[in-house]
Length: 341
Ligand SMILES: [Zn+2]
Ligand SMILES: [Zn+2]
Image (cartoon, rainbow, N blue to C red; front, side):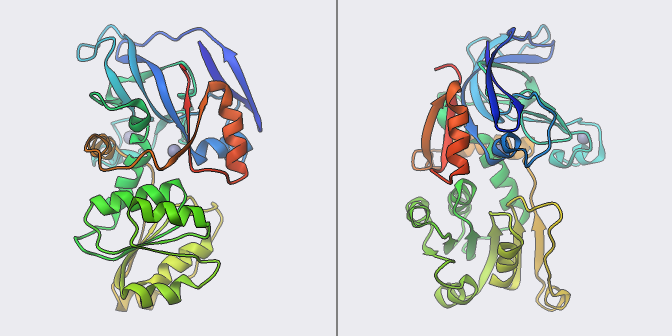
């Protein structure tokens, strides 16, 4: 089978390897769609330290091609979405339903303590606990289950209640998915802050009520003028400056969510008095759980997430490197790879 192998920084090799056999509790899945994520880009560019060689790809869906000896519930031909996070199911975090915080997390192609080969390949083996059935959902839409599971986990962290005013800072792919999931979760007014005009347009199309251009006007000044008190601010970029901006945006009782991946050594200042006196919260969100993954599939099946508007580029496996180059140049939004096309 063909795989897209990272052999070094900025090097993707299309490799021909033996098709793997599923272990007793695993499925062999023919990968029909896999989203390209910023995490893949970080692995490609070297800004995330990994051991090469590695097959990346963790946002995938496909068809069951073989089942392990102890698998009763799945058959060849079943259509599934793949959750790349394999928890140990034994540690305290796992037992409390917070598998994303597992002390011994393994990821199929994603970032985690242990990383195994991912889904930029014609086939991948997956434990049965890591798939959700997708009915007749198309594979392109089903590949959104992983990022949407992360977004749902994020929204869970801020205890959103109906009608609350939310600001999303950053209109990249994740920011746009956040806007949509917030809309379906009952948010009132949604504001998107994003410097790229094209992305502001997309934001309005997928559910933002207002957009602001932070390179033109200070969001912390204009947004409260526009919508009044901000209940929730979600940072979806990962810069200390935009995290500070999100903190400054929220009013009394406000919650700030750090969703973008900040540099490991970055710091931000915050006022403990404001936290105390205005009962503010600052929370983080990392990855997804089996629960949020399953809810993501249900939400995609409901048809309430607009996938078409967010997918800008599609490739065969050989096009993965071009996808990375486009991402480095800031071109487009979501890119998908179809390893079996
Ligand atoms: Zn991802
Ligand atoms: Zn665990």
